[in-house]
Length: 482
Image (cartoon, rainbow, N blue to C red; front, top):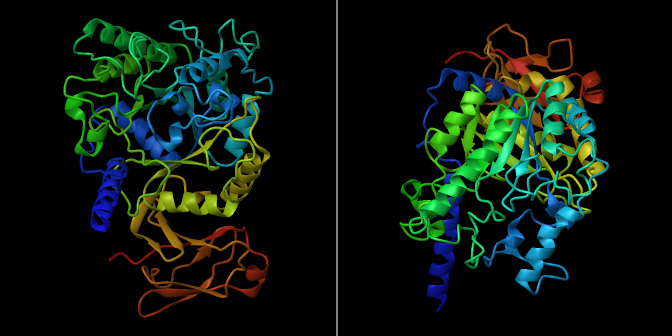
């Protein structure tokens, strides 16, 4: 019995590991052929640091975004509250949240200023999550924030997506539209004729091709609205990877598949052609769907162990939840700066998520963390922006990045409240003989000496007592080329 239990547990972990690894496998990455897209990806890679926001009617209840509508027996699908015991009543109450959601304190300019001051250079906003509630003024459904049933519809900021994109664009930031391919409110995806046992389309598209074609057109139209009515858009960030051609279903995701005939092809080729006609150079991120429209990889809530040679982005919540939870615990400024350094050292971008409240506010802790990151970035941003990874990427508590002129940045990750040490030793590099070693934020060069396996930097007492920043210190030097 113990052996059987072990095999079951091991098998489950193996499947889960496979699914996670599929998010960050670069072997199947298809390089971009469109020169305008390649140029936009280069701009995005140089940005390094972005903001993701999960916000919708689910924020009203402070629950996991959308997933409680899904009938799967998973922890993230658990229903809570007074309607939890009856699915039909719960779903009706959930959909009725559009008549309560009224974010009157929504101030996109305040968010954009805080993000920009923190050093963020792009934003990705949830225009629509799996529940199908649109945070933009679509003409395809009344399940939207601009519905006459929404108390917010008459507010000047009612077209939330438009206001967010404009505010962040005014700060010189790139804009990205998160868009869920599955839509659990759309009758062409979850047909009311059939029950909805899981996340998938609840009918067989092969048996009902006309209905599936209606869903394809519905999806196409919503994306076209976003590509034509919201100014320049840099990124189309598509979520819901089970909505894909069955032939493209990798082995890691077989547990998602129903059977061969359940081919959930939304015709991404048609969507991409339309989107790039309206938005030339648009980056398309069809998450976890290998092919030419997964322009960068998106490991979720984790950082790969090693650097990747293809474009990638770690999307990670600043708190414990993607969506708003009252009293949620936020990562410390120290941890967030270290996270940014670790991601960038491995060649990636960090997309840090904040979940706004139902009133349209960020938690004070979110502002506090962004302020702390911004203070650090003012001194050390040259070690982050426009850098590339350099082997060995990391050495104990020191991350490495490389600038275009060959300068190596050694980012020493300090423990919380750590005092700057008298010496710092680096084993993986040696500076060019006679060259300077600088500490970001300090004008005078630091003394250093070569060792058998690298070099040691000596830090003056005056600098130890009055360091240029906290959380992490950046030492810069020109290395000997091997």
